[in-house]
Length: 192
Image (cartoon, rainbow, N blue to C red):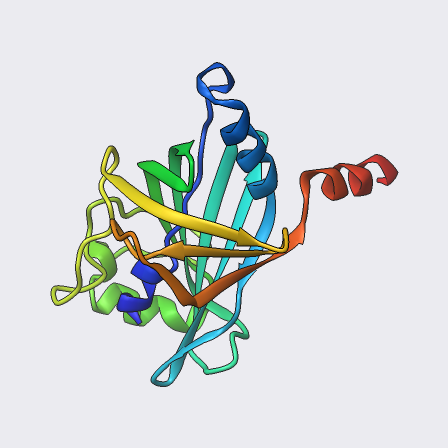
């Protein structure tokens, strides 16, 4: 399941408007909104990613499930970063990585196994896991300040493809579908 994490990485962002070319600003406008991956199955578990871009900020939510149908989140990772766009490249600088356990049934196992080095997990409590390993055999999560470059492509204004970490090749096996744009989100908020 951990290897899927690296395929699903697109993280949050802060943008300096005066540093953007007009084409980069247009690209950022196309990226703005909520994007969701399909459910990925890994053994007896599954994972789903949601990317939310709004007003120069973005969050990647990786939700892990103890089943193969992406129902009832057991662990959630939130990856936050700043980013800049240049052509079809996005350069990310990680700012924060948070883990949350969402099911009471997972708490005892997480504490017993020192998940991310913690043995005091509580339901829905955020833990800073930047630079920490899920387990001794896994790669660590990004540290605050770590950088990553991705190549991206948006097709038909509703499908987003990304490259794997620091690669120029798009990973077409993983795609994100656009659910909402900023304009749609603001329209809904105006009625609430």
